[in-house]
Image (cartoon, rainbow, N blue to C red):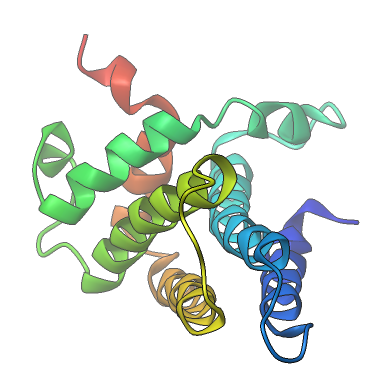
Length: 168
């Protein structure tokens, strides 16, 4: 499977898991759907970042570099973008696109939902809420596709990888 299409496969899997059982779905299916929706957005952004920032030679360099994207750092960067605050504002071209804010906001929300789904067994999920989470992931992917070729997208992708090291 090509890394480029992994996010599409994960969204498809999330949709399938959220709807596969008739009647009351199993919590395992709903939890995995939430996780897959988050990872669809995570892998899309990590892949886009490596495509822009890392050369394609030698073979497998991009694949290895993609592993450097860190969930916590990505969340912190997304919080800055969503709130239009922090060091990044000196790098972005005004006005910051609403689509980029949407991607950032959804990333933070999906990561929180994934943590609940993966680690909080007291949390219960229902199909309607999970389908909403999958729809948010889809909307963030669509928003990204509209803004991905802007200068601010370049700043965003770079910050997802190295934002904490810029402030030294």
